[in-house]
Structure formats: structure tokens, C-alpha cells
Image (cartoon, rainbow, N blue to C red; front, side, top):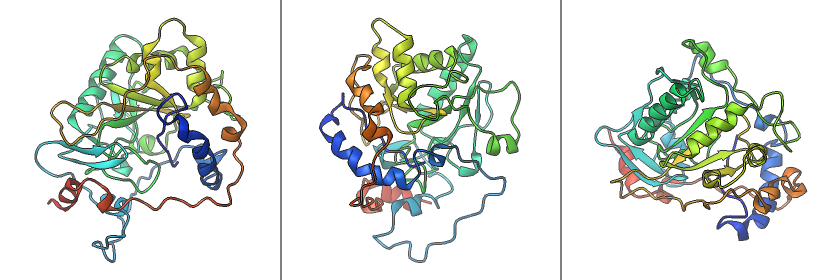
Length: 324
């Protein structure tokens, strides 16, 4: 699934969203956003290496083709370089596939790498949620590639090792097999019409884990489907500054996407602006359920944006990509 990370009309992007909705209408229709494109993708038990590039030094080559072929991280200290949707990662560390409160899903994608700041957050938060009875353990999807950078498919962000997808399916009380990790599906919380959550799958525990994670000071944003935010707004009340961190976004029907602030002592990391310190359950949320968003008309003038090249990433990413 192609994911675009913008915030709703209540953010700085307010003045862009009407035009943005028209711009992406053609793209989401082409991707089948109303149907299969929102489905989860299974992994494989037999991953095949990508073929070598004919001209890896071509400046027009999409950066995603280069970073997808970097199968191991660089050595040395961890460095977060650039922005969440335009950056890379040096000294990445792997999230262990098995923990006392988490397990890695879809390892064939080789996207379980991150900055130690994020990995520590995932491990500690999962343990605390399990110990308190909020959630039995995290099933962790994509984090980042071994050297970060753009991915071949499914994400625009996830480039600097500070983001992770956490499934809405709780971790079972057993070690998953490789077949489980690659073929098991997460729990879909949203109705097919995308107007609300599915009462057959939405549970109080889903709200509780989102609230628990959002209250952590390291968390900058959590992306969920608009229907999920709608349910949270309806089922909570009072002062809810943590709810401002939970941002509606396309897709995200079976997982939530956690984005952390830049770690201390990382001068090359670019933070995103902070979300509003309010619940943000009004007009900005209602926009996501308007006809032009739920049922966009084809845009005959739509032209996909060219993929980002290495030259468009921070200069330090060239050294990261070229390091042995």
C-alpha cells in the first residue's frame, strides 16, 4: 500500500488538503484504494535477491532501488539522518525477532532495522503494556531497511529508523513459526465502507493500547485509519492531549504506525512539527469522511511524482549507502 504522510486540516497542511485530495484521487483509484490495496500483503518463505542494477551510478536512478539492495547496515555508531520521508540511517540495529513481549512479522522484507532509540522504545513499551495487562505483546511489522532510505513499495516514510508498524492483532502466547510470520494476517478494525470501526473486531483493548502508546513522551505521532480515530473520539471524553498525537491517515486498518521524535544528540535528524495539544475530533476529522475523500473522482490530469533520487536526500546518505 502506498502511504502518504500528511496531517488533516487542523494542522499546518490545512491550506493544502483540498488540492491534495484532488491530486491524489487518481493515484488512489489507480491503486485500488477502495478495495484490495487496503488489504495486507503476505511475505514469502523463499525471498529472492533483487537483480543487479545495470547502472547503479546513474543520477536519475530512484534512491529506493539503491537502498533496497543494501542488505546489511553500516558499522559504527547509530546516526539518524534527515527527515522521516527523506533520509537514511547509519549504524542500524535489528529488532530481535523474538522477545518476551514482541515478535517480528514479515522478516523476509528485511525491514526490522532501526535506531537503538526506537528499538529500546518498542521493547520497553511492549513489556510495560504486557505487565500492566493492557496488551499481551506487540507483533511488529515494518520498521526500516538496514540503511534506511526509501523503500521499493508500501511506504513513503520509514526512512530513518524512528517509525514502526504495530499490528492490531495481539501477540499469541507462543513462538510463531516462519510460516506464521510471513502468512498470518492482522486484525482489520475498519468496516468496508470506511465510515466507522467494525464492531465485530474493535475492542476496548485497541483503544487502551493506542492511548497507552500515545501517552509516551517519545511518541510524536501515531497514524491510524480515520474510522479508528472517530471511534476513539466517541469513546473517550474530557481533556485528551494524547489524542492529538493520534492522526487520521489513509489505510492503517490493521496496524498503527508509531513515529518517534528525534533522539537526543542526533544533530542530523529533522523533527516534524508537533501535533496540536487537543483531541482534534472536529472538522479536521470530519473531512476524512467527506465524499471527495471517501469516493474521489478520477483525475485525468494526475501525474505521479517522480521517485526521489539519491541527490534529493541529505548528502550524508551518499556515504551511508557507499559504506562497506
